[in-house]
Image (cartoon, rainbow, N blue to C red; front, top):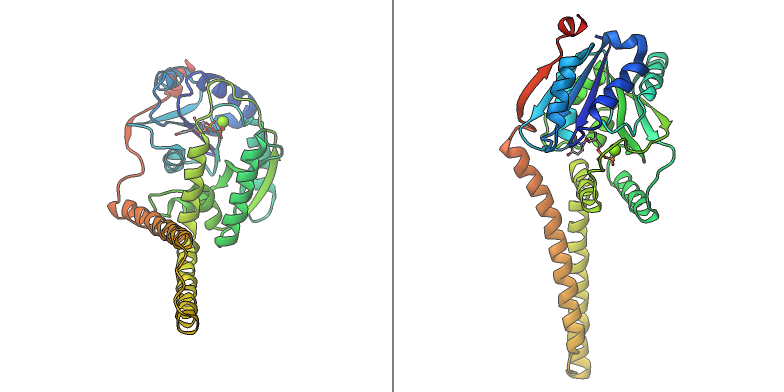
Length: 316
Ligand code: UDP
Ligand code: MG
């Protein structure tokens, strides 16, 4: 098997067939040596039925893995990589925002660049609001400063990986999976290729601002322990400051008597310090929650059904 195409799907019933048809038409001769692995991430619409129908009608190798509930795109990617057999594995969205023709370009790059084990596509131009773009650029600046691995802005999960790189990604046992970080952490030579994102074929995006924020925090906590160090340093600085303040108060009282301390000053100091304490406690809590999740060792996803195309039967 030359190529495995991994497609995480969540509520994409109207996109499954158009995606398959377009990809088959684009891959041309390659398609005979390609397997399609669709992961139905607990969709609530007719995605499972659409996949069942596709498996019944497909003339090429199609496998569908159906989760017992929505486990998230990261879990879908993991299940797809685990089920893949190809020498190369492409990860692509089901909504046709990512034109399958770029898979051919990425395959070309990975095959013809010496020593290359991965190609990641990044959006040359982003169609998003200025505010969101600003937040994203802050996130990338921050995460690149405080982690050892490199996070490339706009590099998506739209990638082609060599078998070697897929095996390295699968060898990472962690349950809380932040793919962008994992792809970077495993190393290897990765090329970046610009691509033009298209409009969604049908349905709506599953990302809200808050989901993105939670995702960003997840990324930082998964790949850096610097926030813990920052909170300790903040604690030490405040301790030193409080000693200084105490000395000032004692000296002032001894030399000039005891003027009535201002209540507003006291109130703002209490608010400031309790705010900082809660903030630091929150940081510690994030790491504790991650450790808790890892310690429980629950599976990343649970499979309800799998079905696949019967090529011989369909070809008749
Ligand atoms: N997706 C998924 N599980 C989820 C959310 C999304 O498998 O919980 C899939 C979705 O079906 C699509 C891909 O991940 O194929 C990208 O999602 P979406 O198009 O909503 O993201 P965007 O393109 O807006 O970043
Ligand atoms: Mg999309």
